[in-house]
Length: 384
Image 1 (cartoon, helix red, strand yellow):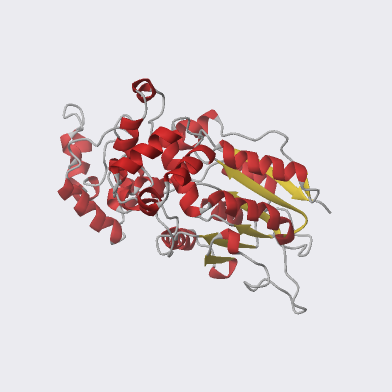
Image 2 (cartoon, helix red, strand yellow):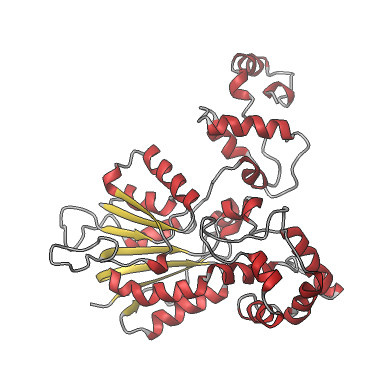
């Protein structure tokens, strides 16, 4: 597509001149549809997608223009990992990376980002004065993107260390964070941005979303040798499905859906499962604000990745990873996670609660990133 096809011709002679002069660049300047989550316009042809994917993979100088204008529904098709971190300013205000560490008075502290994702929080910490950031993530693609993003921002390699690791498996001493006496060297702050990321949702091959057809996978780490969502749906007893749909999805039609799944086996794709769920629920439930499959998909994702068990481990171990006064900032996206964080902070005497009520994204941030609207931030400090 050329800029000349959508700029009005009358009164724009100079604009048309530059459009022809820089035709290669303007091929990538795409008009933004009214709603980034709307259906894909006709002018996004498969040939166009293939061409632009090749340009992105070759680090084309105008690739950023594509990322700024593409509907999010296409980022998965392009294979682009583009994640916008939420509540970044609020997290920075509480973790205070610009404050000198209690152990290194001339420098900022050392921080642990247990969910690196696209590297947004890690980059903000380093740009605000953190001396060093250690980043963990289950998703190897996220780590590659974070490393490239940090390098592009001019962050020296010695200031960032990335690990392909589930934060539930992290250990100070086992992973080399110890002094000459073998004692663990704790961090000044920890940030955890829980749940599934936008790139994972937008990539059909990962199987997290029913908006596009993909395999029933849902593993945060696609290289892990573990059960997939397809294994759960096709092999688990009905009672197991009912249990996770109730516990992790708070689904009121859990029994009906589980029995309908059993009768429809085998199921291999996200759209197949979504259709079965749609048929299972009463007609009145199909007209709700959210799709009937939403809670079931959430429950399967949590079960496949053992997300709540990992969060419980984090909340129990984090005080051991922090210096006295060090802070843990946790961003959750649904009530199950938020309740775990709230009661862990209140009941564990090692924590001093800094946010009696969770902080939510501003209206401006929600407008810029609609997926941020359900985010909640809670912060606690390790007691001295």
